[in-house]
Image 1 (cartoon, rainbow, N blue to C red):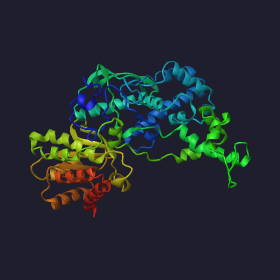
Image 2: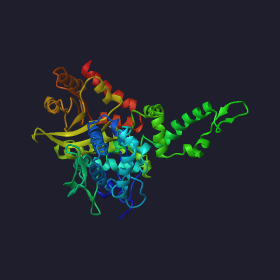
Image 3: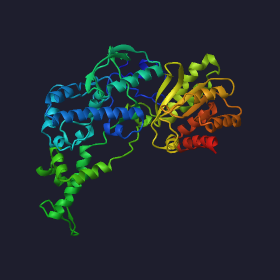
Image 4: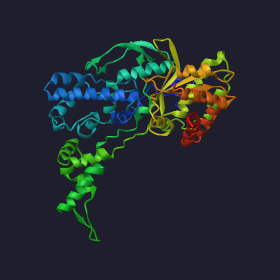
Length: 483
């Protein structure tokens, strides 16, 4: 068996990273990608917000236990942070090896938290802060801690994606996850994909990063040392050098070599206590909108070719016959095409989601995570769309009112009021636009119909990386609904 086999190859998905919503991992090694709790907290989609709330819940429980002297509880909960190898994220170059903080290391973290003024003074507010001031806690450990805490959400995502992409699953132990409702670690049996007798947990590619936004080295080099340069010049210390032109300078290398200013997390905490304004400046400098990695960046990280043949997707679509007999093939192709066009603004496709106690089915739902472009435009124009609801019609003829009514019947205050009707052709576009406008006029929601020609045009824009053209294309269709 190929020791460098990707998940898509092992399960014979016939899809590339560009068509898959999760990281197409190498199964026998780790990939140096990380889940950043700060980046999760800055996202506005339902999955990310739920994960972020669970992380906050866990960390606050640890802090509260330490403040209240319930050391046994804090130790117990920290010791449950085992090594999460199921995601293949981390720094191992051979066999996957997570870096949890169980055992001796969890006790070390507890002791550092217990004696740290960062806890008693309220300096530590969330898990991201640990990267700045707690020794031994770096990007890989924080990512693994997050994976443990939100494991249940990742498992639910994995089950959804396995259904969407037809990946076989087996009932296995879930591993421990944090139940934020009762504040306890729990375990259950659930359906997950298996490789070499071990479970696999999929991670949305939209939420991973190359590094953490909170970074103690950046804080030290770009903020702390800058402050110390000015402070030493003002005080006229021995570190000040006089240049030939009469200018006084303090070199960062001299500060780094001075034992008083050596880079340690203990020093950073003490400095931050004495100069909270510097820490405030650093936190305010952090990116408020942290973009997801592109498919090209993900492929480059795994040393795979980064060029993607969008023409293959076009050809795949055109080779599918219209009619009921090819409906499943069309449905499957649409999931990959929409993923390739709209990631990262839309993600987490859910195929054939059942609603109304299973009486109705939605062909595809996507989470709306847009912070720019057309799908953010919808939100800014007060069109509620936490989900984008898609119906696929592999018909020979134009869809009619029953198909539009079916899609608008899937809208709700919880799911949202915007959807895409995907079909093979629209011969009478003017009539289709009028029918979609009727839905708006009756206050039943907003529907944009896209046929093969529309999708091929959007794929061409994506091929050229012309995201502005994609947004303008959709905006023009929206204008015809409301103008």
